[in-house]
Image (cartoon, rainbow, N blue to C red; front, side, top):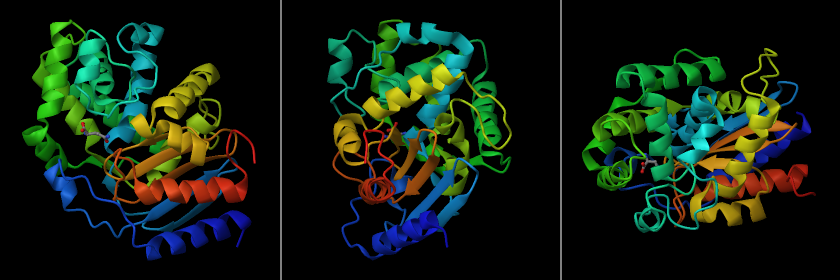
Length: 309
Ligand code: GLN
């Protein structure tokens, strides 16, 4: 076993035994049914070596991790004009905060809180039918993960569509400031569905490789985005990827990362690796509890924090 494989398997063994698992998301009924006992981890190094263990091949709801990919797609479509609609400062508030949006006159703080991601989805939707926009997002995920079998979990999307009242409020509020161009129900339909994309840790780690390697997928040599854009997406992940837990994640893990309420985290070790972890139980800020602890162990043991050993 390589050192990386040993570290990954020891972390998975430890995480499987821990009893402090956090709480699964209950506000999306379909996610409340997920067993908090799951734990998966996949790490893909610069040379393509994969170290993966636990439930690394069990699909889960990627939820807000999809926002990294919609941001990438939207930047490709509209370029830096995107930043006229959405800021790029950490929010210091919960991911679904309504009050912050009022203070900031309908311009979301960053593309990773719900309001910001809904505004980004609206940009992707403009000029398309919702079905086309969603197809575009799903195909982009399949392309990056090199796996055409990736799908949307319709039960999760329908569950959120029935209960996502806060997101409806955020979208309508932005609409009143003309930050949303399309009919609110169309934009939210696409948003709920891209959050409901179902992927495994292994697939997600493959999809994130371009962020770890200056915008290029090292296995194919294909450029997904310019190096400068990858650098900037990573910067926003570091400062905003964990909502009001972003400071704590940077302090403990020291990598750009994006969490989702399905319990997944995609983390990027620039030049070194793309990492995906899944543990469904969340902490108070809505980020994976054991996922964060596992990444802290990993970066500490491998000296991978971007801030030093
Ligand atoms: N679909 C979820 C929501 O809009 C995504 C939130 C998250 O993963 N933090 O509430």
